[in-house]
Amino acid sequence: MSLPKVTVEVHFAQRLASNEKPTRDKTIKKLRLWMTVRSKSGKHAFSEEDFLKLWKGLFYCMWMCDKAVVQEELADNIAKLVHKLHTTDSAMMFFKTFLKTMEREWHGIDRLRMDKYYMFIRRLFREQLEFVKQNHWDKEHIEAFLDVLKQGLLNPTSPTKALGLLHHISDIYLEELTRVGASQLSPQETLMFIDPFCILVAKTRNKSLMKTLLREIFEDIVVHSTVGMEEVLEEEKRLAKEQKEEDGEEEEGEDSEEEDPRLPFDYSAIGDRLFMLGSQKETPGLNRKKMYHMAQQFQDLAKGIYPIPDLEELAQISSEDEIEDDVKLKHKRKQKKRMLEAKMVKGKKAENGGMNGIKENKEENVNDDLNVKKRKKKQKKVLEIEENNSTETDAAIMSKISQKIKLKKKEKVKKVADDSKVEIVDMQEESTKKKKKKMKEEDQIVPESQESLDNVEVTKVIKRSKGAKRKCQQVDEPFAAFQAVSTPPAIVFKKLVAPGTEIKKQKVCRLTDPGSAPPTFKKHVKITLSKNTNHKQSDYKKQVKCSPGIPFDSTKKPSHSALKSTPTPPVKRTKTAIPATKLSIKKKSRRRSSAADFF
Image 1 (cartoon, rainbow, N blue to C red):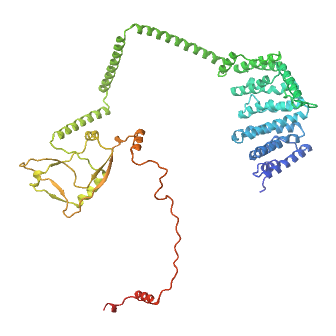
Image 2 (image 1 turned 120 degrees about the vertical axis):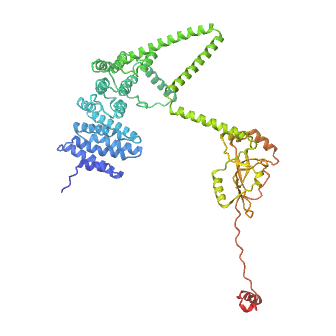
Image 3 (image 1 turned 90 degrees about the horizontal axis):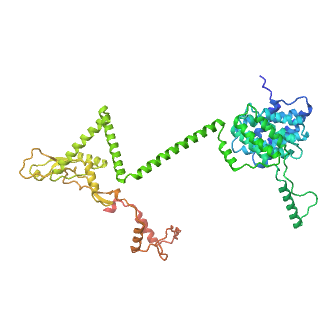
């Protein structure tokens, strides 16, 4: 199987999109030579597909380029490739494929690379106009250049999706045209360069695009016109010469300060063209209105009058920018009239009501308010009764049951209060319950005798109710208090029994063993959050003043430093000579004792 052959254009595109800068620079140099040789030979003319392949590589060559100076140099080198093409068809084909690739890849450009491509488009437009300039602004070359724009981005029948690209081109178009051909173009030629934008303004349906074209092309011409500024410019030149003579800086030859280049325009021809396109049936109503307004301004410039809009006109224009058609404007006006009429009727009613209210007494107004409130309450009650009678929901039944339960609880609490001695005891927490279970298993349960039960209270365990909690909370308690908690037998409520009364049932009591250790006590802190208050600043200052110690004293020194002490080196002990007697004693003491030593 033979592999498909790679064409020269694909090979160049792969090398141009390389990650390494030296390979990209070498391929651009080789591409320049290859394009000159191929265009001179005339045997193999460039096709649109060939240029699209090359532009794919050139686009990503610009994508991989970094640093502003390097990017500008690369943009100039790519844009100057147009001059290596010796035929107008190939040069315009090169420009057409460039616009196609930019339109295709426009939405893939991120915001960090957008400025780089803005500059790239500007440089390529400049070099394309330079190519037309080298041919002495020939009519054929100008028409070929404008046909590329009309068939591509400025085509009103098939609008482009890359609107950002079209906005940028309309922004730079006149600037680059003045830079290249301000001194050589005639008013008729400049009208030819502006004509595609006149057609697009007349036929476009995009409101934002129409605004940018009017602002960047036509309003810019009006702003940079010299109508009515001749006297001012002459005075500025005269003042500049006087200052130079006073300073003694006379320069020979041409002046150092050059005048700003300005394109020559035939204002009456531009106004007629806009009026003719705006008067066609196909133009939308909003576009027609804007074009007539611009045509009037150009007619004023042709007469030598600089168009200065009044403040009222500016206010009307700003309000009418949001309206797309004349029908919407009429509809809004009708709505405003209706709103004003409604406000007038409300105002009259309020005035009549206010006059009647002043005549009435204050007491009558108060009584009326009370009557209205009573009526509303009665209406609410009637609605509630009707709802209950119609359908009793489950929620209503549950509410009745809950009321009965609450009444029974209240009766039980009253009975307990009537008793002589009742002690309300806290039920221990979950942790203490576990301890009680263990103690019950260990302890023995012994029945008490009847004699001891004479002075014993009858046990009645009652859990603390919600009412008891509320009573306990009302008692004044300190913010933090220690409470001794032990693990004795279960705490119960007991009733005193008078001596002589017979006890029917024997009660069981839990006793501890006599030899068992006393119960351990643990301290628990009970914190009442209701007593939690902020410490006032005034109290803090009083406390500091009354305290015996001084808060800060510069003469005081700490008892010990906070830093660690430096480690002292260990003392080396020198070996001294030991007498023989001591050595013999040591040896004897080290000997292991035997059985004979004990007899």
